[in-house]
Amino acid sequence: MCGIVGYVGNKPVVDILMDGLEQLEYRGYDSSGIAVMCPEDIKVYKAIGKLQNLRDKLRGHEKEFNTSTMGIGHIRWATHGAPTLLNAHPHTCNCGRLVVVHNGIIENYEALRDSLGVENELKSETDSEIIAVLIDRQYKKYKNCEKAIIESVKMLQGTFALAIIFDGEGDKIYATRNVSPIVCCKSEKGSLIASDIIAIGQYSENYFVLPEMTIAKITRDDIEIKDFAGNSVCPEILKLDWDINAGTKGGFPFYMEKEICEQPDVLRKTINSRIKNSLPDLSEDKISDELFENCTDITVIACGTAMHAGLIGKHLIENICEIPVNVYMASEFIYSNPIINKSTLVICVSQSGETIDTLEALKYAQKKGAKSLAIVNVKGSSIAMQSDYVIYTQAGPEIAVASTKAYTTQVAIFYLLTARMAYTKKKLNYEGVTKFIDELAKLPDAVENIIARKEEIHLLAKKLLASEHTFMIGRGFDYPSLLEASLKLKEISYIHSEAFASGELKHGTIALISKGTPVIALMTQRYLAAKQISNIKEVMSRKAEVITFAKKSLVTKDINCDFVLPEIDDDFTAVPSVVALQLLAYYVSSDKGLDVDKPRNLAKVVTVE
Ligand code: F6R
Picture 1 (cartoon, rainbow, N blue to C red):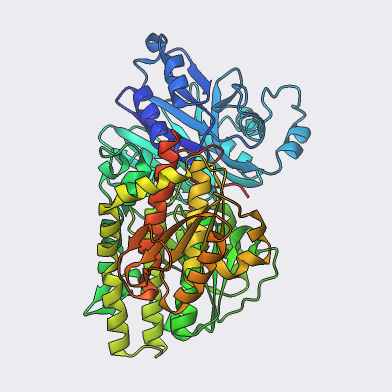
Picture 2 (cartoon, rainbow, N blue to C red; picture 1 turned 45 degrees about the vertical axis):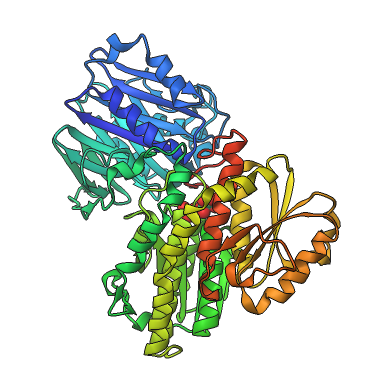
């Protein structure tokens, strides 16, 4: 969703802003704009659609801005008002002397508009433009930029990350935020801010998250932060722990393929750093056994793919630790009157750490007294900061909208949590837990085996290219993997796909199976194989086009197996099978000529409810 970038320094600003916005493209957007401090005034350039359109608009204006070294930029994912030039950010006020970019939602914008009596002055339909008007009014009153921003922010309700520049006040960018993220860094080229470190990580490996409800004054050599009472604030400095080249395609046609292929490495990183003397060890994540000893039940809260990781976690924890686990869609959680109390451990799962539904659900659970643990990929993100404990997946930056490596590393963390919890709660003894960890350590190789055979999957993908609908069937532990596979296929190939627990299909949906309907069958669970074979035969007898992915030892003459999954213990099949199905979705989308990394209507970071 929307993204912000800002720079003040000693280099030409436009290239830096455009590069930063390009890095933020993955968040999803439908218009963009920049505001640049030029010698005579602030110049604003905006475009609808792809960033290339903004680049095209800038061409020919170089004389206006080529000496400029300060500015702010924005990509907008439309919420209030269509993607038009007037609605695109930056928004200006006072004849362009005050410029604002905003990420988030201002809930009381209509009330503010009415109380300021400015309905006829506003040029856009957005909830954001009112912020510029409000700050301008306060600026005229107090003649002080900081005071004007602080007094305005006090009147805003909702979520916001703001970057603001004033003409005639020197080379300074002001930034403030509530919930929506802003990270800042300094380098020899100047000072930078952005919605995500990926946009500015190339300038410095040290950065910090701007604390909520503080104000940053950003100049070429310094970033000064104060709370709203005027006290200096010293934020925690974070270190970038991935190679900045990880944010490039590295020779692959799409980020998604690159990220799928990175899974053996990132799984090794996520798992190996948490195994000591053959035991799961979460001490570096500052998670003590007490957290597990005191918990009687677990509630997992997440959205989409991250929620599917939670379903895998439920299967593992309930089976091995024998503790009840509820998995909630974050968007439904606070409206479901969930049963949680002081002995509930709430686990929030999120790649971005910014999904607003998950964040709000976490805050709600905390108010009910639950302890919280976040499984998050992005360091210093809102969910990571809000949670009592955090375990970072070490997936590195995930740029493709469709999540792949973040998902499998989330699942890897659930394996580690299960092992540690089972050991702490004496559900597994030393031999049991070391055997579990040995199996876990085999996962990266199993994934490598699948990636080495990706062209076999590419051939299978051809069978789906002309389909409008597909069904996926599997039993037990395979079912959540299929929910994830089905989501992957729909979101990037636009083929309607539904996953079913195989036994459930005949309770209605089998009516949709007819000659040639593609059905993807997954079979990795020994104790359910006979039943799954009979479910596969049910759809075959209705002339469905079945594509079967089966674990090596379960392949039988009774049914055709199209892709043989590596032999691995039943409790660990969730990772290799999903990787095979990620590849299937990937090849369907790329062979259809679609924009695999940026599917229509989707945003990587979902910061609106
Ligand atoms: C699908 C996908 C989404 C996200 C969901 C939650 O491929 O990526 O379903 O999983 O939007 O996002 P995070 O994990 O950032 O909270």
